[in-house]
Image (cartoon, rainbow, N blue to C red; front, side):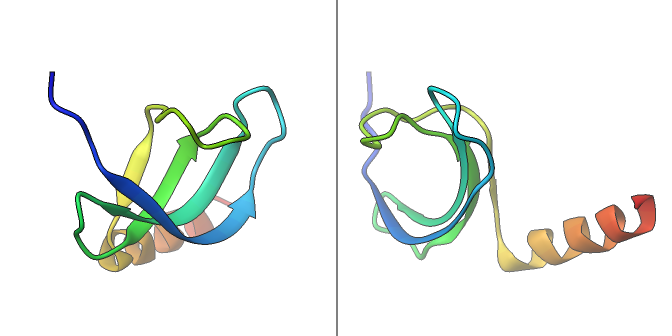
Length: 70
């Protein structure tokens, strides 16, 4: 099984404070440039939950779509 190297470059927001709360962070995966990341993390960030990683362009499109929904 391959392993993933990750580094949380910047914490942006905590969306929920459940056991594995959802956070938005800038995360570098396998030494690549950081991307926006919405994911479940345990408090110590020791395990990677499943969710979504977005480029700045993808985040911009999502912002536009969400603005139209609200």
